[in-house]
Image 1 (cartoon, rainbow, N blue to C red):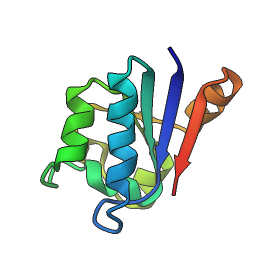
Image 2 (image 1 turned 135 degrees about the vertical axis):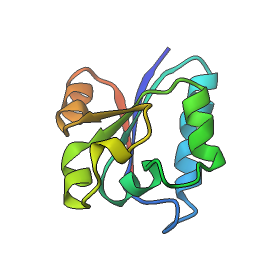
Image 3 (image 1 turned 180 degrees about the vertical axis):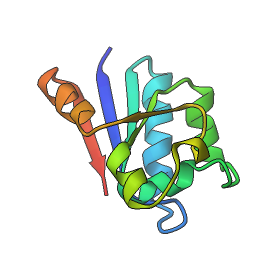
Length: 110
């Protein structure tokens, strides 16, 4: 079993390629890998409560893939913590560094 951290920076409204990144997370999880998702920059917009959930994010949540979101990115975009989906863990970029040190395979999709 391998461990993966997928990083997404784009909102699904700005690029359809985001779907591929989210599907990769699901595919890796289905192959019994440990998978986590880290969301930053404009990608944080997709995880607000008032946004209709779309299938790729719903699939990630159903597969119990942990979702971390960059605290700086939500503050920078004026998003209140209470306006994020309940499945989200607010975090710092230290999560990425921790995974790099632990030899997790990090895939940065931007």
